[in-house]
Figure: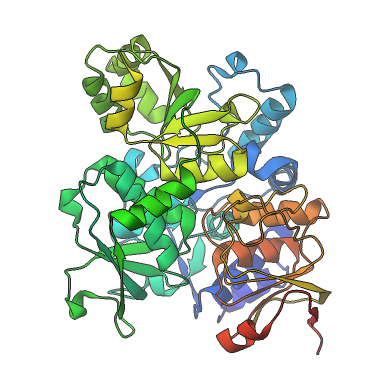
Length: 400
Length: 120
């Protein structure tokens, strides 16, 4: 990757050690994405916020760089952390976790980062169509590229942090005008009667099939057939299994509509059988001790829709509903929170189903959810069993 | 071949045919693979030359790689067939040598083999 004189100087350490680290990260990012130069970005969204995921090593790293004066140069927002500060004392998390988490939040605050604590920045902020951004949260990067018309790499926690500090990112194929991203495979969706769980599994399947390509083509379905919940589930599933940063809906057999770089010659079927295989991999428990909704976090429409579908019924067991604080505040003003609490929900801001210590193996044995993303991380990282079912089935089985 | 993070590393090859989601699949304290559906399930990456097609999944995996290094449980070096930003930047911050190999070269590497990265 070619660097300008001032960028070379920063990489050589002439602008201090924080800038040097940031440019080292950008150099590795540029090498990994075959970019020729850096370009300005206008918004960075960071992952690496939850103490449960980055631990003491991550907490110390952030404390170290913020105390040495690291500052963000562009608008920068944050992924969820481990708990909702309003109710954390009810969950018995332990002092180490609570103070470690507070330190991480403080470090980001000192760097000038907006403490949005949300994995759905595309729902709580206006998305800049056609603009260059740097989103680390995997579901949000895929959503931004595939549904919102913005351009981002599937950034890592460190590449997004380096972009926040420098205001720059490598000009990769995903950032180019037109159809820069290449796809090697078309996944044909033919699973019957799809719900959000099916779309989550489709995303998980397609992300895996995409291999190392930056994009994947999907046929047999179009965006207009999907609701917001289904779109988010698909982005969440894809971000969990793959490295691709984007998908495109294509018409079956339409070669011109397929990926550049020779098109996507291979077609793989996502049928009921393929869906069953994904489900068998992640559906590991008969019954959850608790229901968890929100991975990705719920937006305002999903809160309203959930309340509407409850129609006065109540959950028979605990149901945790995860959303951004910005959504919880609105939902409170609209009385959705009161309605959901009356139906037995615990509405939690700033955190999310996947990797919250509120759903750790010391707290629960198994969780019922409709999230493929949540299911992967609970099974593998949290060591918690997962009872996977779509929201409609959860409402049918678990309410009265 | 492409060197994404320079440096010398020596160790025994631990090879996987499956991408690795460092956040969900690797215990950051012990370096043991915790994903039951992974071909390296139960094995530790500590001190190895870890050879795998690419990273996958969570962007936070970069912190996992850094945490593995801080806790002394990191691989000595890594080799991938395809570059991805999570592994590249995690290795850059942690100072773990990372090479990207052509598919033929990648295919020829076997678990148990001794390898030296960064020799001239």
